[in-house]
Length: 229
Image (cartoon, rainbow, N blue to C red; front, top):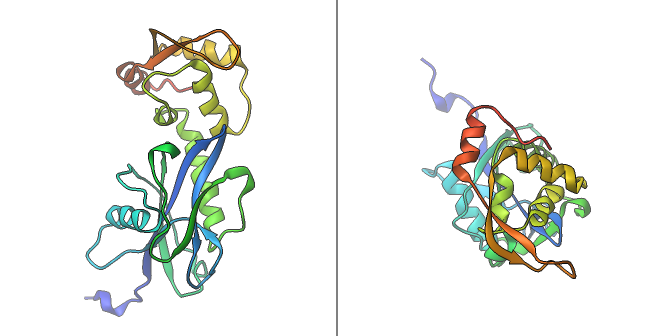
């Protein structure tokens, strides 16, 4: 019989890719490392899993300790375990990701983080460890999720305009979408319902406000009907 103590014991960490939309662009939450290795470099929030702690608990704890962000639904992304990914030794990390509204969370650098900021995905600074690779994987997952989940609606208020909805999709996809084509496809899916309210958008006439039909979307998803964007 083989016993666990006969095998090497690599350390386990968690890393978090937290996305938001700011000024029409996709941003990610980064911390500036206050200790070695990579002191002074930007990195994803995260840290070591404690003895007796499950992975998600560790992820939520590290996120709160390093950034002040709390009470967030996290989705497990992938496990990264290249032998040389951490200069401190053999470290396997389990990555999580989430999409939140930046104005609903107050950021505050704590523990070993020297700073915490939102950074635009199209203008990232050099990152510590293999965090650039983790972010690339997370962004690809996020864009794919637009096709079969309500992930884009997490950044919208309960009532929103079609322009606001399209802006969310364009920011995540990183490209413009034809207005008429986008609205035609949304209409065909029948996942929105009009309200009696309108909202001013710039100098144009007031735009109609909509709300999301959650139950309708679930029925479409069960049938395998995806967002065609």
